[in-house]
Length: 298
Image 1: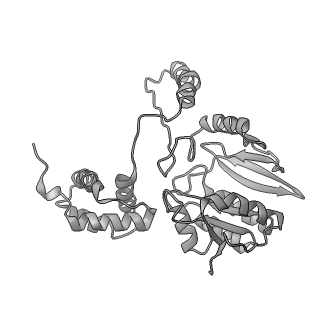
Image 2: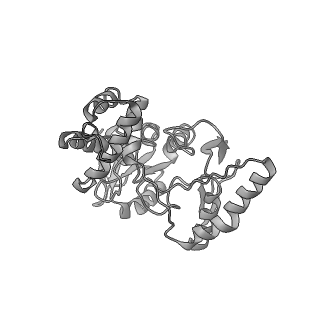
Image 3: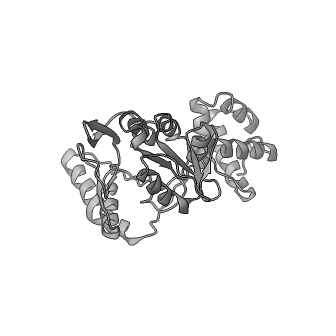
């Protein structure tokens, strides 16, 4: 049975969706994605009881802070995959995650077994960003074996020290605190921010309050706006701030929002971010001009 032709989005509808998704998320939908977009719009139209794609889009785009708009963005941009690109994740799933889930199921008598694995918002490997609880410890352990500095999953009260990298644990917010000359992290179970936990904005806001000009902040490729207002707060507090440039981003969403709101003092290609952060940190956060650094006027 064919799809109701009223549910099929027109070329104009597709172009509208392309523009909105790019503006909101930094994702560029190519023409070959038209069939996918039309199929996902049809599902939203049917579930919402609308008569046409035009009616649905008029409703969803009326208020960009509404749940309807968020639902449209989520429907178009969210994808599910059923594979891992590296065997380490299969091993973790079979040896740690599944046994723990089965044990809990037996103990509680709950017949449901729900598993969720988050991928990077830019569509890269599952361990690169937005990882859920349990996976962050394994990720930190893997990095610790590869890096010359100490890398560990952050625990509540951990001191922030030279040559130590703290990975925010999945499922919790990580924020910076200060006691005299000692910086340390606090792990808390507060509400989601931008649908994220941990959220970049929470972390950056805490750096603005407690570190000020003694900090350097950077925001890299990713979907959405998490981190933009926090980076702006850091800049206003005297910190040096960096956003990845559009050309080197897989998804120019989070950096774009940081640049638009004035939070990014420097816009750099990915390969220049780390070295620039080190140089800025060694000068107490004061900007150093070089051929690879582009200063943005706010």
